[in-house]
Length: 419
Image 1 (cartoon, rainbow, N blue to C red):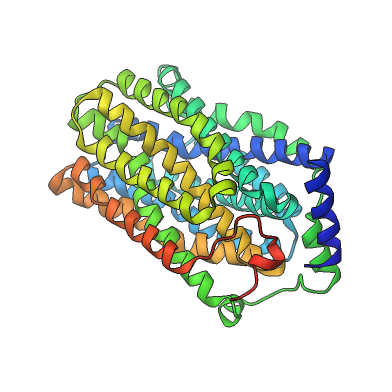
Image 2 (image 1 turned 90 degrees about the vertical axis):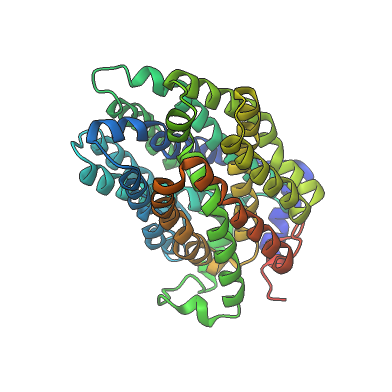
């Protein structure tokens, strides 16, 4: 570990967070709140879009999948964090997402909606990924999992707020368009607040050592870290097949196959989200205490049980209980994999590694699976289609245990070494 990183780490471990670290923590949490808000907004308005634009099940899946293409294209921004710096990329993503979200409110059809939401997600996921890189680099090793976990939990809080206010906003004159206006306006404040943001100390050090240089597209695949990138990419992809569809299609499933009302769905989702929140704020601490690997058993186990129960059980109370586990796991698994992705690569490659493993490779499952599920649901219904995705979550857990080391409490300079 470098002398500079060691001094910073010792100071924070012995004295707690500095004033700037607390400000950074707050900033990253608030910025990530809107990631949760926006990603959950689509799941809540899909039935409204389906009705307004007369979409089939397959077209609903295609709409969801096409907007998610932006999460892959976010690669172009995330990898620039290793060249431009974390601060500049964060500023660009916040401004870009705010504009794209406001423009979404003016769309009049599925094509323009998909295009603008695709663009919005380029910036949204770019902001989210850069926030996780910041969290990995700027906080002490002993609390890194806790910080990443809480930031991800705040994203879930954004989803809760979204679930709570959508039924009311859908009754306004602008209907679902109001959601994108409400969600974007507060980001103007965040855009001003980012002026106090500093560059990551680890990136500044890498830059001073001449390591923050331009690299071609395939550079990381020629590095000793190629294997780890491919491993994490596959784990991310398999995980997204389950998490993405469990959340995206629950409302559509409940309305069509359980005959719930819009109010009942909103109530169930809100209850599940609120009930899962205490667990989400503790998941990071759990990862720091029992480790990433054992924590994965808890997280993926909750995901599988929650998905099967939410889409397979008939009792409303049982479905809500299962939904608590599913909502918890959907965010908890992101905290787990974000921690791993931030810890297993050196500073000069961390942004590129995140972009490759999550945005390019991992998001293949994120983008293609809603389209495939929509086609499958035409034949067997949403419930059975989504339940089938749990096999992918189980596969991700097995590969994580086979491939990834324990990183609990270890400095980045140690965990990033190729073993």
